[in-house]
Amino acid sequence: MIIAEDILIRSTKEKVWAAFTDLTCWVEWNTVLTGVSSGEKRLTEGESLKCTLRPFFFPVSVELVIEEIVPLEKIVWVTRKIGLKARHEFFFERRDNGVHVASSEVFTGPLAVGSGMLLPVKRMKALTKVFLSDLQKAAER
Figure 1 (cartoon, rainbow, N blue to C red):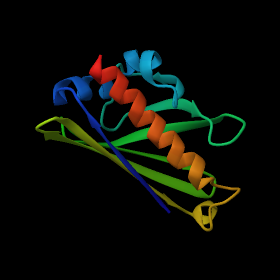
Figure 2: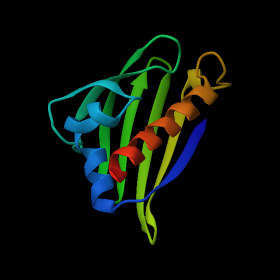
Figure 3: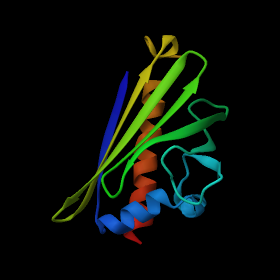
Figure 4: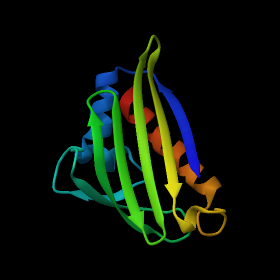
C-alpha cells in the first residue's frame, strides 16, 4: 500500500527545510507526530526519534529511524511494528512560487495487505495531509 500526498509551500526551501528538520520546534507546529523525543535536536541520518500518532482512536507509539538525508532535497525514515513496515520519503523541490513537498509512504507486511481495520488507509492519508499542512503553516509564518 502506498500513500502519496504533496503540497506547495509559499516560502523558501531553507525555511521549509529548517522547520522540518529542527525537532525542537515540532511541538509548535506538528499536530500529527506528538511526544517527539530524540537524542538529537535535528533529524540526523542513522538516528531515531520516538513519537506518537493516532491512526485509530487510541495513540500508537512508534520509533522512526532516519535512513537517509540529502540536505534540502530528501528525507527518508522507516518504522517497524509487528507485521508492518513503513518507509516514508519526503522530497523538497524549489518552484517559482515556493517549495513543492512530496510525501510517499509505502507500507509492507501482513498488516498492510487489504488495509481496512488493521491499517485505515483513509485515516493515514488524512494524517499525511495534516502533517504537510502543519509544515506549510510553520514555514509560511
